[in-house]
Amino acid sequence: MAGHEDLKPAAELLADIDLDGAHSDVHSHASPSDTDDEEELEAVLKLTVQLHNKPIELPFYHADATLQDLSDTIAEDLHIPPSNQKLLITPKTGLLKPPFKDPTLPLSSLLDKKIVLMGATSTEVQELESDLSARRTRLSRRAAALATARTHNKPSRANRDWKKIQDEARYTFHTISPLPHLPNPSRSLRYLERLAADPGIKSSMRKHGFSVGLLTEMDPAEHTTHESRTLGLNRNRGEVIELRLRTDAGDGYRDYRVIRKTLCHELAHNVWGEHDGKFWALCRGIEGEVERGDWKSGGQSVGREEFYNGVGEGEEEGVDGGGWEGGEYVLGAGSGAVGGGVGEPLSRREIMARAAEERIRKQDEAKRARDAAAAP
Image (cartoon, rainbow, N blue to C red):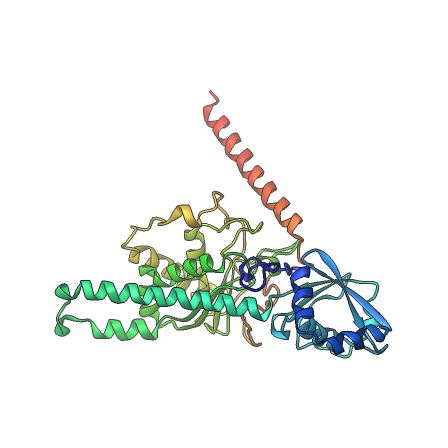
C-alpha cells in the first residue's frame, strides 16, 4: 500500500490493524511542539487495547475519562473513524460500537478487562472504494465494447421487450456491496453480482415484484454462536438482505446453490415475516421458479471451482429466525444474530475446530454408508 507499507490492506482486516503502521501514521502528523507537550504531561490513566493481536497502550490525562473519550482517542491517534470502530470487551461487557448506549461509562471500570479493537482506517477504506470504482469502470468499458461489437445483430426497437427491461430495472437489487473489513471483498462482490444476475433469481423477482435496497454479505464471526449459525437475514421486508457467503473458518466460500436457496428463503420474507404455511408455500414456489429459470446452467452450479468449498454445508442449519423489522442498518457495522440463539461469539480457533469436526463427522458417515452398502 503506497505510503503505508506497514499497514495491511483493508481486504485483510477484520481485527487486523498493524501497530507499527498506526504509530507511524500518528507520529508523522505530530509537530515538535505537540511531542514536547505530550512528553511533559503524565497520564493519570492508561488503557491497553489489542490491535492485530498486539497490545497498544493509550494514555488519558484525566481520571474521569469515559468510553466516548476512548473512541475519540482511537479516531485521532489511530485514524480509525467511529463508524469503523468495534470494541470487543470481555468478560461480560460484549461488543460495543459508536454511538454507544452509555458513552459516559468510566474507563477506570475497564482496566481489568480485555479490549480488542476491530476496524479499518479511513485510508484503507478509501483505497478499497477506489479499487471497486476502478473495477466498475473497467466492466463498463467492456460492456460498451461488447455492445459496439454486437451492433450489427442489434434487434429492432419494435422487437424489444420494454416491459421486461423496465421491470428488471425496478425489481432488482439496487445496491450490491461486500463487507470491506473482511478478506477478499472483490471476490465477495463477484459472488453477490453473480447471484443478482442469476437468470432464475431475476425472473422470480420480476414475477413477484421484489425490490431489495441492499444485497450484502454476512460477517460469520458476528452470526456464529455456541447455539446457532445464521445463514441469512432479511431486514424490513427487503430493505437489506444479508447472506452468509463464507465458510465458518473463513478460509473459503460456501456452495453457490446453498446460498442461492438461502436467497430464495430471504426473498420470501419480503412478503411474510413468520415461518408459517403461507411463507413456506411462497418459499418453495420461488425455489422452483429459480431452478426452472436457470436456463444458463440447467440448474447446475457454474464456476464451482471459485465458490464451492468442498463440503456440503447448510443441511443442518437454520436459515434465519424469520423476517426482522426495525432498527437502522449500517454496512459493516454488524447487528448480532437475529432470530437464532444469542450467545458469546466463537473465537476463530473455535470456529475452525468446529468446521474440522464437521468435516470429519461427514467423512465418517460417508464411510459407514459405503461399508454398509458393500456388506453382504
